[in-house]
Image (cartoon, rainbow, N blue to C red):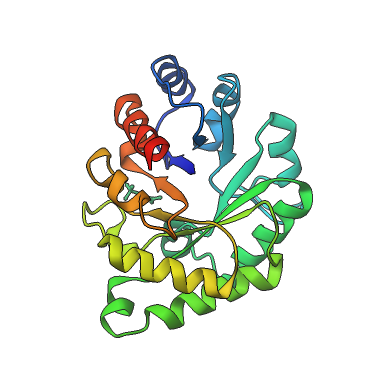
Length: 230
Ligand code: PGA
């Protein structure tokens, strides 16, 4: 089981240190944290597994505001998210950009959690499988069944809204994704201590990508414990 905490644009270095002082998780669960870039060094000092939230595809260059795979590795960061729906929706990341980021990160030796998921409008118009196919195929074209690649299925309508999909709908989407690309699939979107065990007990759910509930040591530890027993 892999449980990833996506801190989004929360926690500077001071708060990151304070979090790790108060956090403990079962040893049989792979736990990774994705802090903002400025807190990566502080997070690495905790000895925990630390991923970035995004990465560029070139090693160096005139790319203001971007960070490269080799820079992350130099810091002790061992992986990265790519294609989070907030990157896609707010910052214009396309499937091509997500594919480039994925390939460059994997080639440099970073692990990758590549995020996919449909919007409410797409689900309601019956386009979920079409959208997932386009997103997953772009990642698969860039990376194949790379052993350091994990997919995160995050229905956009369930992110930060308190609305979770049902375990059955999530299981169906995970099964569909695995049919396109045979890699582990995490579920993300309002995962909380109260719903983690039920979601994680589904056969095709291989872990969770947690936003809001990863910001407090106690709630994130409770989700990690649920992963340990399921
Ligand atoms: P959430 O975020 O758990 O706050 O819904 C999940 C994510 O965006 O990765």
